[in-house]
Length: 341
Image 1: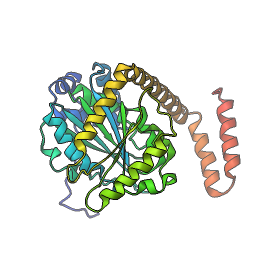
Image 2: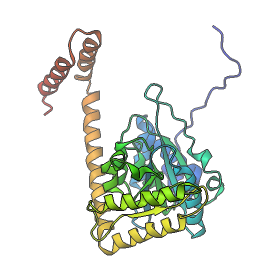
Image 3: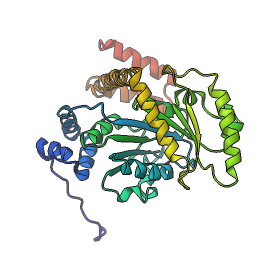
Image 4: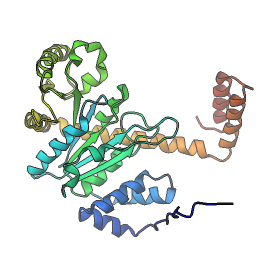
């Protein structure tokens, strides 16, 4: 048997005491923060359990601002965030960006290139950029985005931005994690309102028409008028707010100051009318429901007296011995026979 002598064996890092992680978060140590997020993302029970123990020992905060940012690939999300993050830091904020990249359906791999596209922000001491693969998780986020938000807040970051994968209608899930939902579109998108998913449009608190520079300025202004007309027919989830529609260019640093003003206007209005705390509470309840459902599903899937039989049904389906309907009916009958209703 031959092997490559240049391959180095990766040493497994031992888990550290709970105090190490809590002290690191309190000191805003970015390396420790990354370790904590890695623990919560792990599939190994001992690591994930430690990750949740860390979460149980931190104090939730309502002083941060959570922003969801979505838009189709190529709309310029990372470039916009690079300039936007710098401006926020200059205003005294500590900015964390949780950038979710789409995963391959076959290899489950991701490029995770967002960090390299934020060339200026990555150099800042008060910025933290965490690229994460979406895996098989739908909704434009990753499976543990909510937990990552809580950990970054515990590390002292008060402006958390979730940059979603930007691949379609499932992006709407990110709105259940944030205080304000920002939709980026390109000039000309207003020419075909049907091409913009209504679900996302209804959830958007602010719409920013990016890359409105050069010859595209006029087209961006036309799109703005068309979008305003479309938005007027929709009712926003928060009383007294109509989504702001802005134009600008992340590359040329135009319109970003107005965008930040709109973001803070929305947050201030949501606090004034009581929507901010109500929304956070609803999100907490939704997170609990999701976690409970996942835990129950995990118990069913790993139950020793059920799962082997489920695998047998799966093998029969794969070999063509039974059809999909029979496989589902047989699995349902199996679960009911075990007293799980």
